[in-house]
Image (cartoon, rainbow, N blue to C red; front, side, top):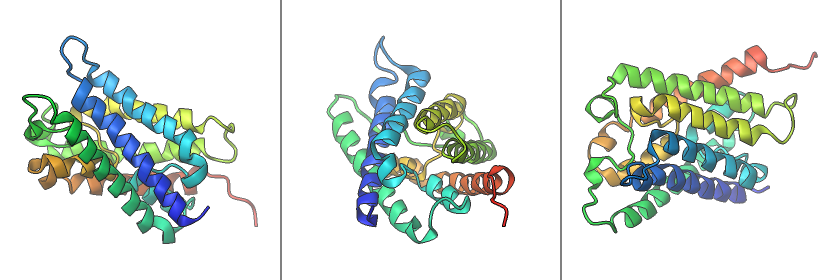
Amino acid sequence: MGLGKRCAAEFFGTFWLVIGGCGSAVLAAAFPELGIGFAGVALAFGLTLLTMCYAIGHISGCHINPAVTFGLVAGGRFPAKDLVPYVIAQVLGGIAAGAVLYLIASGKAGFDVSAGFASNGYGAHSPGNYALTAALVCELVMTGFFIFIIMGATDKRAPAGFAGIAIGLALTLIHLISIPVTNTSVNPARSTGVALFQGSWAIDQLWLFWLAPIVGAIIGGLVYRFVLEHREAT
């Protein structure tokens, strides 16, 4: 498959992830009397990834996350020469979804983007008021294990056809654990897509949600590659 088609798939996949996951947080999490809450938002993120795994996995691999692309490069599963085009497509998809979500959300009287707009944060902007160090460790560890699960589920020794389920459920679990800490990023494109529209503190803190997921993903990819992956004898 050509790089252009693969990048297009990454754009649309990331769009779906942000509109589905962040959209559920902005539009449905606290809806009067019928709000889906943290658990519902966590499930929404998992479902967006699970559905896209089967929709575009055969086209682009369904990274839809710059950290995943970095982790798979470190894990020897993806060529480094395609990293930058993938990341650009993912970030543009996230921003496009953020724009659409903003247009929808701003149609309700009393909408206030400064309240957060599903942005990731630490300190005063963490849902549970967790400090910078806690947020850094959480994002690093969660993303590391996310890559670990992705590489394991897509290993040639794993049962065929079930990777999307394991990966989608992994993202759900990650959100169940870490929404109170950082509102859960583990995905720089997801963070960027809404931070640009929040426009103030979310942009100031965005650096963490690029740094920690990418470092965690690289560590996770390297651990799986050199500790658990089967290496043919030469």
